[in-house]
Image 1 (cartoon, rainbow, N blue to C red):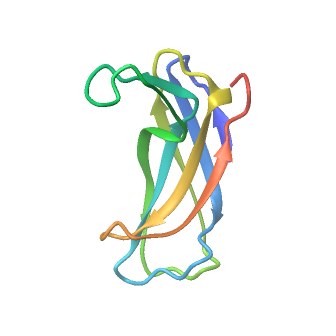
Image 2: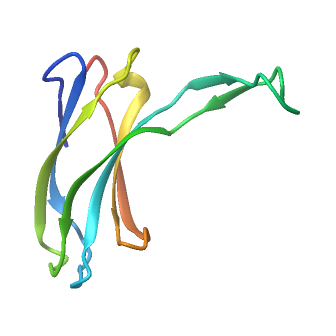
Length: 119
């Protein structure tokens, strides 16, 4: 995976690799999730009012890299996705997860990448 900040507000993620699983004629989508860890939420109402909750691996953005069908497990695919970033984006607290899912949202595999510091 390669990561580039083309502008201060965008992150470009380029990926290339083998699926490592055979894909039938129904096909699958290759999805890319941008997540953030270390988020803190103060609960303001309900039974947990006043509590502070820490959240990790919160998906902030989700994009489809590509759709594939009828390919062998050795087939190499590549693509690029662009994410619009939020105010306060800190690459040291973020990463991406690439996963393969079918139309029923069943996930067949995934891979996680940490973003470089000071991206």
